[in-house]
Picture 1: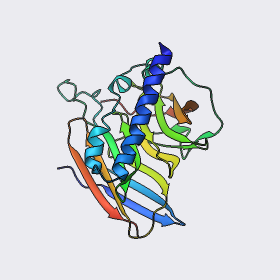
Picture 2: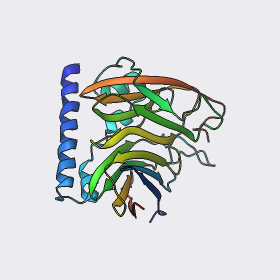
Picture 3: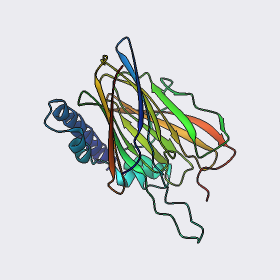
Picture 4: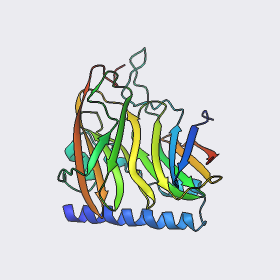
Length: 160
Length: 103
């Protein structure tokens, strides 16, 4: 069963790169491509626990890799509503970087596809409800790797 | 129509650094308003950045991305005068595209 899901994910991955080629060839405008890249994985974004999220993404928690690092990411964030997070992967053939926040109501926060030529290094800002482990999941050469970091929050980002 | 994005690009030795600041509520769907009703989720779910029409980064986001989202990345092969466009689409189907050139 697990293998089947994995296969699906791989297939989808293949679809995305084909789409990139189509865009490069000028057949589709970026706007149209965006609509087609509708692979917004609702099932995965809706999951409530890390386990479910990993399942929806097509696997179990992969091994930790020292080649994935958090950059400009605080150990303690005063304001959980705006926590800067940067993820850098040194793994060759990095295809995607996914950010998961374990204790958020929905752990899956963001997922970035990295086409060839783009550096596997992205930064953004997220909301973190309470002190939590944050996972960077990297897909490189078809395999998943991860790194994690604990971020302490002194003021939550999800309250009313 | 949502407010424009702020896109800042800087090129150095062929590597282009792109910083984007979008203007969006990024409502999580967890928060309650004054009368105790849940404020429905409203967030940017898809982002695509292109360089001369070629996708250099695409992202899927959930509501955990902070209000007025910030995004930074680097790609190779850009030169002065090239066009960078960023498009987002939110979960209500609203979309916005802004462009800039490398200078």
